Image 1: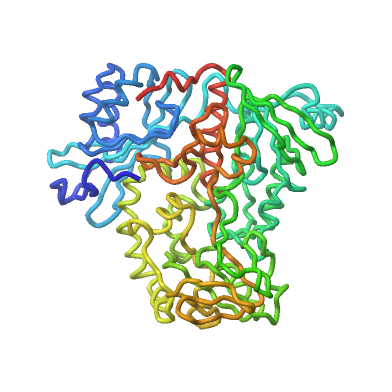
Image 2: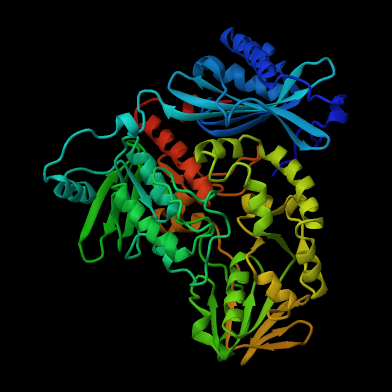
Length: 605
């Protein structure tokens, strides 16, 4: 990702020349700024708008002005956005929100960093949205915007079929047959095919269904949720229930804080049923072709014993996970190894290997989970660490997110706040927070790991797991207990030397040592998210998709939930929180295209 256009610094009180800004009325400051902003917007006075921002301020947009995920840094680029899109968008009806959880308020982020956060609602020509502003103080008692988020929440003419817009008709016995016909698409084609019935695919399908877009989910596995059900048995989510809620149908208050994968799989199966999503399981797409003149896909589907169907659809959404094919290192001598060597995606349970010796290659979440599984079953286990790992405790992660992701805070508002800051700002904040956590809350764990030779780091840019996840899709361990087993010596560590080859009884390393094993698990991650799309659509289509996942030059996720480089082709990737939040944004983009509201060719910034 490109470096920032401005010096990478936060608007600290010292930098701004301010001592104590706390003796103000947050509501009055927010109202004064919003009034000035609203007047400038109404008059299309873009120069006056940008004057309300710091010189190095940000405007982040989620499909409200740009129909894309964009971040504009500095007054020059913000003005460029407004000159191109302000009149065309029709930004209007700006109103301060002052409910208890979103009322204006001062936030002391650090001892030398204070800002005033508030929200306002707005309309555009086609929808309604929510904005989040972070103001910082100046010496003349004025406040200017450091960041502004504009996020589209709904389409005015196509509201979601929720609440008062739900189906009010009575049904006297036709529901089952109606659902059968809907799911079979006996008399019509879906507008969208979603490939993958995991959390991202189902949540995207739900967003599309309830905004009025006929959608079919296709999955090659026998049951909905099998993408989680078929993982290793010890898998449990490392994030909390509040962070992992599902849209439209929330996890009940009896749900555990950390969700076992098998339990999540069952929930997703129920989720699809209760939300009446149309899913074909045990089905495989065998052929596709794109007609560029009609902007449609022809899709051949093998229904696994139910015959073959050829469907004509407008959009394909790949929800096949954040990674592609399993990554397995090419190590010489595998044929000579007498034991079992598998990727973590094939591993099930350490209970199958009691009394054996095991090696786990890799040191991130899955590697630790599997190593702990071996340890819990009394298996002699060694973890091979190829490079240093960022380690953070679940306690620290929960504390970082706990101010907005909790029982008392609406998930929708939490998601808006969570996305309100541009990545450049989040990274700067994390570069302060991560070392603090390492020296306080997690110091005992990290010191203990260092004593036994386990190598740790502070993440990319020193910004912890957030940078690793968004830029690499992994490379960290959120500690759920394996670190103690490593510190206590129950999970042994090997590092500092490259694997040279397999042997009959294990692995040989460049330093001349050999480790014996009956089973070797390669927890070495996955390939390119485009792999699944390439298998379905072919090389010609895949060559047009330059990148999926990672961050672009503006700090936005590349290729996922947004235009990826090819019409009618989308990717729905990410953890449960990202999928929950952005699935609706993807659905609104597709709906806007289908209704003639959105034409990507018309938007040039």
